[in-house]
Image (cartoon, rainbow, N blue to C red; front, side, top):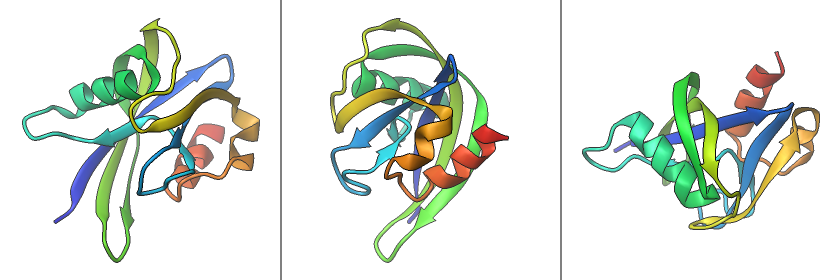
Length: 126
């Protein structure tokens, strides 16, 4: 059965907020903050929660930035990434994020990214 995941696209001053994943899938790879939607949770509420858990930042969640999916032998995850704006908190990696940092948009593709991040980065660069 497919799972639903959300991500938060925070772009400020030409930089994108990325986290280094601490758990599978994608352990050790970089992506936007995000995770699975819980039963009874709206997509935007899940995005707000995941941003706070992984980065320590409070965010206002906006429009959909990108929709995609990741299918492997063991996973099928439908992903919905939302544009967001940081409204408070202090950046600090936590939960299942090993690191969190602001990355210049034109250097994001030099990081080892999760497979679905390539499509999002291409869209952001347009």
